[in-house]
Length: 202
Ligand code: HEM
Image 1 (cartoon, rainbow, N blue to C red):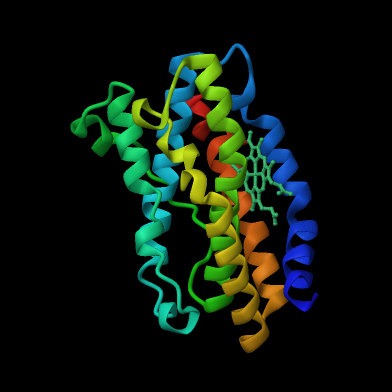
Image 2: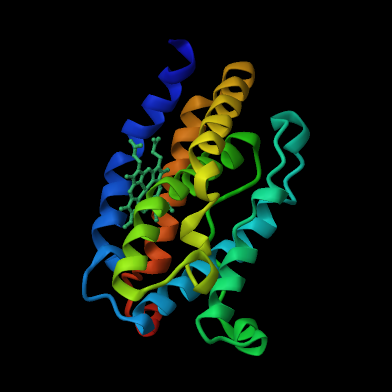
């Protein structure tokens, strides 16, 4: 099936980075504390907010034929931080990532979207675990990881079909893969900074 070939390639070409991130995230740990969880939600918020703002400024949405605005994850992250005890004032002070992946072209957008839409799949497992470890529900602080809830599978397949069709029409497969890997790398560096100066939040 031609439709699945590029997605499969994308998955294989990024699986090392996915695994590295998955191994470092403590979200499935049985000993995960409420405070540590909140720290990660805050960190994801500091990444997604500028990322989604940038994504929506790139003039290629007509070409993609996809409504990302309604898929934005930042409102869910805000909602979770407030449910976890944050205040609107505190949200304003959350550090924002300034080392975002390069997002200027159509392949950049597609590679980046692949990563952040794919994250909703793992989010289903994380959501179930958060219910057990911290007693959290999508309403009480786990709406980001819950993604689109029961719609997550169908929405992932709809995104996959769009990605495949646009890549076939416009080319740039290698750039999409490079951009997906760049996105994974920048999230990894943001969540798990390697340099001393930026590691203070941990
Ligand atoms: C504890 C953390 C995580 C776990 C346990 C996890 C687990 C999973 C699982 C089970 C899938 C579905 C694989 C399949 O259907 O074959 C998946 C897919 C995916 N995840 Fe994660 N994930 C985690 C974190 C993340 C993060 C933080 C990101 C990116 C920000 C991410 C990006 C993706 C992508 C792009 C896919 C789609 C792979 C594909 O089918 O092409 N994941 N993840």
